Length: 288
Image (cartoon, rainbow, N blue to C red; front, side, top):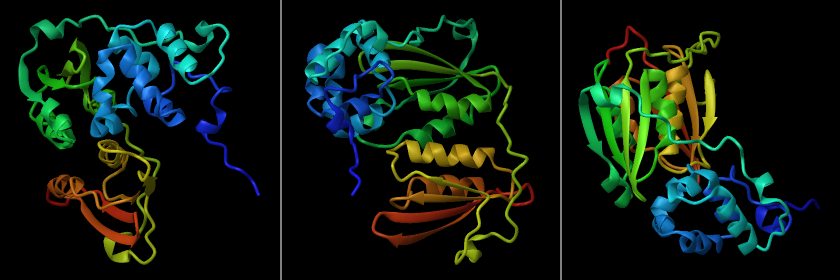
């Protein structure tokens, strides 16, 4: 019988690098959370299980070192030593393309802030701010800015708002306080998958054998990633196409957004932690 190898089985042989997500580090060895917190108070917020689930999947070891003001090689060496991993030249475990602080673009000083939103309390209360952020972004006209305060740099938002013409610039104030400005350049370049044809006669009424234009699985993701993944997938589909989503629960926070966009949707439960959501993207003729 084949044995499944997990990261915890390879401790001592597989070195941790700057490209690892913090979530990977903690799966490798949960005790390394204490090592991170001992390295700098900037990581104390990871003791909050809600914040840890969200932020640890978004930040790499290299980015965490930058946030904490540490040399990446120092943090990598400390994590590997604490995990009992023998390493040679630590520089080989440090990626050369670590993100640096981007220079301040001219629009930071000149563009008007159309909408300002502080979502730090959302994360502290375990709530999902994605809907509020997207609603605020729709109110920002070209040439103006959405100003966001957050507890970390929300890099997944860059992939969502970028195709809508928003250029981000972030600045860290303290260990859990970030200012992020999204400038609406007015140049939306959302990719359209025109080569993908809508499935014929596929609506929620055809649920016995759903044939979707695109199928995605968000079962392994933690909030806010499922909603981001679903809305991003819908954005890239042509009007009238269908999206089939495999999920572990009914996405209650997603339904109001789908209704607002005029998308038809239906959910069925297949068993414990097994849910399918079929979404039909609105066409130009459908009322929104």
